[in-house]
Image 1 (cartoon, one colour):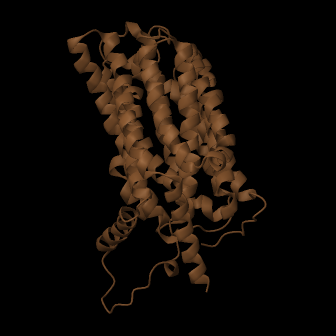
Image 2 (cartoon, rainbow, N blue to C red):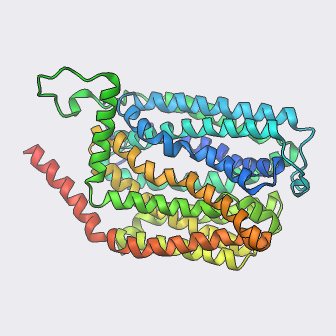
Image 3 (cartoon, rainbow, N blue to C red):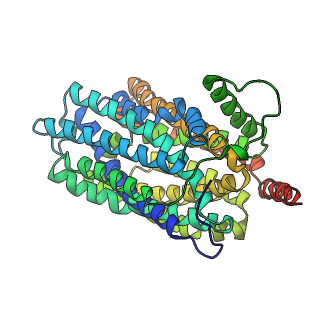
Length: 456
């Protein structure tokens, strides 16, 4: 890679361009976090169809993550981010135009529970667009995580990630949602138009980062055999297998990927139909729906700023164990005590613990995965971590339908949280033994020893 030198004492101009792009795109995502679920509930009241919108957006993490890793290691990662942000801007613009065309027949934000049947044309447009958004997001986010170690000094990684996760939490859950609610009340299509603009502005900012960010061929293991170079397809499979085998053989990152995938899947069992839970059980409108998200913003802000100190004080292993236990507890409490202020507090706890987990584990991956393999290994990791989200979303919609056939609608919507809590409790038992501080420090030490030997 040809990049400006990263100073050990400062994050640098390139980081701040990436940071600002993240702020702007996450502001749009925050608006979308209110607009998309409310739009889905205005188009249909069927829990499986509502969950299917989430499945469509997250399915690419299951089907495209592995190829995206190979692509990330073969192309300029900055250019990949720019291209994908442009794609996301165009896809969101398509949704905005589709909503504008149907705006006269859509119910108001406080009238969604009166929806009868499904607006098929708009539903299909949203479904296709969200799938395209998800495909672009996979490649864009994988490129973003692999580009950061190239523009930030290794000693600054946790600081850089902490600030990034913190501001993403603030814009995504504190500033974006209330702005989205206000725009949603004005007109259903407006937040989608603004969201599209945020992606395009973010693309322009990333394009201004100087340097090239391609994993150079001479970083890879040389081909010492006399065999001819493999075909494009064979080479693609070989590169993918190399990333898969590296992660599969790592005693720490492999179970961490599995645990994170199951944790994310459990969260989406309740998350996929949360908009229906909020409307029908918590009895809130779009503004209170936004206020609940403030809890997540506050928790994310605290987590992003305090995570490095907390991990240093208590040890990363203990912090990851507390994260697993706390998320299970939060789901249990929300399902039992369905009152919006309680949900707000539990969202804050979830967000705090989620950012704590991310700051520890993302920085760990960036520091111990070899640079030439970072895109591929990161994609395999995220195949498990994010690939379970569409599966969990589908399970959530099916759970509501099945429980509703045996009991009432409210119990069915509550049940998704209880199922998520049960999965979380099992993950705590498994993760406490696998993700210890001693194992994390041993993995870091092994990389330091390898680098020292290479230097000799």
